[in-house]
Image (tube, each protein chain N blue to C red):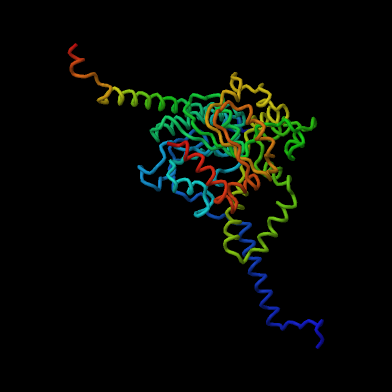
Amino acid sequence: MSATETRVPTFAEVYAELTKIAERAQTFNRLVTTDAKVAQTPKTVVWALNKAKLYRYVPVVPEDRQHRIPLICVFAIMNRPHVLDLRPGHSFVEYMLRRGYDMYLLDWGAPGPEDRNLKFDDYALEYLPRAIRKLKEVSGSETFSMLGWCLGALISTLYAALRPDDGLKNLVLLTAPLDFTDKTAGGFSRWTSAPTFNPDRIVDAFGNVPGEMIDYGAKALKPVENFVGNYLNLWDNIDNPKVVESWHAMNTWVRETIPMAGAVYRQLITDFYKENRLVQGTLTLRGERVDLARLQANVLNVIAEADHITPPCQSEGVMSLIGSQDKELFRVRGGHIGIMAGSGAEKTTWPHIEQWLAARAD
Amino acid sequence: VLTRLNMPTRADITSLAERLTNIEMRLDDLEAKLADNRKSARKAASPKARPAAGEEKQ
């Protein structure tokens, strides 16, 4: 037999290989069609209004070792906030609880047809202040820190600028879409700034914008990576339990889409993406002009360098407009979700946020 | 058709849900006021807030 000839596998070897492939296919099918257990850190509902809920996590360190100022997390309005508490051993909430923070999470819930008229005005000036009132009552602290992510960061910024005397001491912004000056930055900006893109037609047709539509839009920004690469990555690592567990939890979170209230979608596209009113200084909520110079809380603005949903320029431009004396821009290598939920988050983003807050939370 | 059958329409249900949210907001306002009152009462009852015995006599 020459060196170039390959050995013909035996029937038993072929059978074993096919069995292995079949088992992998079964695992693959299970992972893409079922939900993993997410958001398992113990918590209680301390406030609820309409679909919104404020959770308080059960503290894990004695009271005398806790930071004095509580922290409230405000996530985006078109996904569930579980990504902050993805799975035991890889949860931002769990990480902060272990370091002595009194943790709260605001879950906006899924809007129904009756919520189609909800706007940023309602989220920032009606729901959020009420949740914060309850947070103060429950925690016994008149001051608090807030962490906003994506549109949650936008809502947090609006609140912080309009209610600077409400007790907000520290504001952490994660991938905050605030400055839409550059209409060519990112797929969303390019799509929505086109004169032919009319949000009214979508809202008139659907009432609330379906979660599936938002999810498709986000995935279409990187179609090959999201529709092909994501699954190839799973297949290539299907024998690695660590990767599989992580993938399953993340896929569970991604699959759980929720609609966006029609009026807030219209406002987001028109007032922010198309007209850039926040940075222009022409944005008004309930008759009050939003002036970023009035924002006085300490600010940590975290930017994901490879963010295709909120490109860095949409977050960093506001640093000069914010009135705060203590403000820091922190750039992290990674994407929109990866910087907080990726495997490297625990070594880079979380420690930086924790240390920044620790210096300001007592 | 639904109206003729004496059944609520989608608009009826939506309107009812909106009214429920408004009621929830009023309840939340009331709860806030009660909490404020409790806080004020606690402050007034705390030893620091009480005037000293000598001051009371004056």
